[in-house]
Image (cartoon, rainbow, N blue to C red; front, side):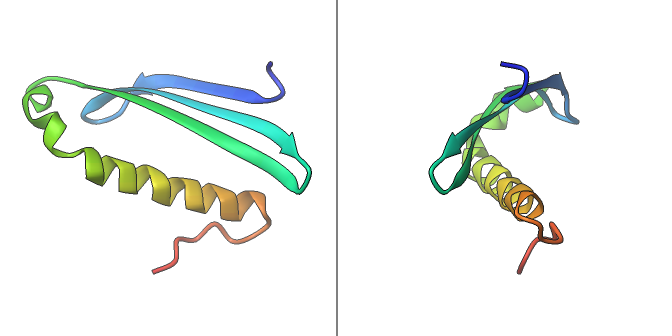
Length: 79
């Protein structure tokens, strides 16, 4: 559904990435579902399994900023 789903595919510095954002109405607002698929490129593929926690934290931080922007905030990370 083009009004509720955004999909971005491309290369990041060390990964081939597929990012999906899905919006759904709820009784109290809008729910955002985010799917991230990363495929390591080059030599990073060997050690990529060592960094899942860092990637998860980074994605969570980005979603927090996006939520702030969508709710009318500045979008600046807190901390």
